[in-house]
Image (cartoon, rainbow, N blue to C red; front, top):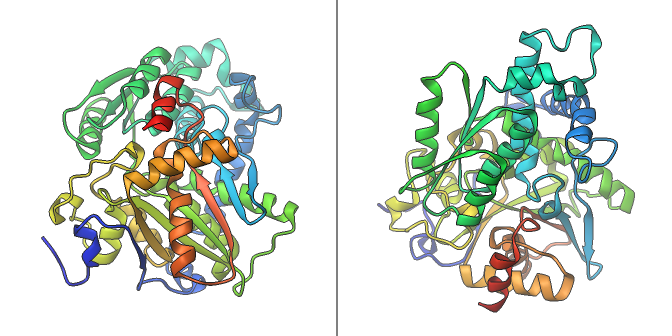
Length: 403
């Protein structure tokens, strides 16, 4: 299936820079949405309520203040790197959404059981009464790996049961580390969409189960959106003040769209037209570009002859989230597609030159930055958002360097 609205490079699996013709001035785009600053404020407030619990559960990785955030790095004095590949607890951006939604569900269960009455600190949720309550409930999620791990590590820390439905392209080591946590891993012969649908159906049939829906969860979305405030604080500390004349240009690796969509929404709320949002996808899995260019929520990459097979397993998604696309379709400035060869080359380069341990998905922004800089000339403050990699075991990471 092809359409005159689709760039010809898309079906040929060729790298490209695509400018979104639906982009609107940020004020107009945001005014049309039922969401805004108040939703981000609520997410930040919930993160703060849970800070004592997070510090208790993860004393070796989370700071005493209970904040989950990553450093902002400089490369060669010209490129900023928001290093979510080194994010505490999970070493991937999915902690911002997956951990957050597990906390939301834990809060709801605890409130219903009266455990948070009388102004109790949320650290009480690490106690015996809370664990006995949580043990009777199961969290289900469909994942290619990183969201499942982020959900699993937080849920198991609280004593919740976890069932992660994983696609055929999910890496074996990601399944193994989930099992090591005590999560049940259900493997599917199909792709990410198949795994997600299975988890959704099973959860709907069990009142003691809760489904985290990567396609349509607004809790995930606003968990990610809160990260924009973290970046702003770091930029303020460096003296970087974006303006419409010299905007931030932020490169966000994109799979189904929840994490980049949430971050994009948060940044547009903060900076308006002083930020440009660039999503980055593999040439074999450009599901968000396909959705934006076609306007059709039903289309998948298979419909245009692509196979959805990529080394960037975290981005191997055939169909974009209709929910997220509906929110950010007028906020995304551009989408870039990148080849697997370029991702592997970038993984090696980032390790050898800067000591960054990235998985292929997380290298996408660097590849896009070089392509965009050569085709879209403007004075900008470029920011690459890395999304995972510090959790890669040596037996997985070292072969990437040798390939």
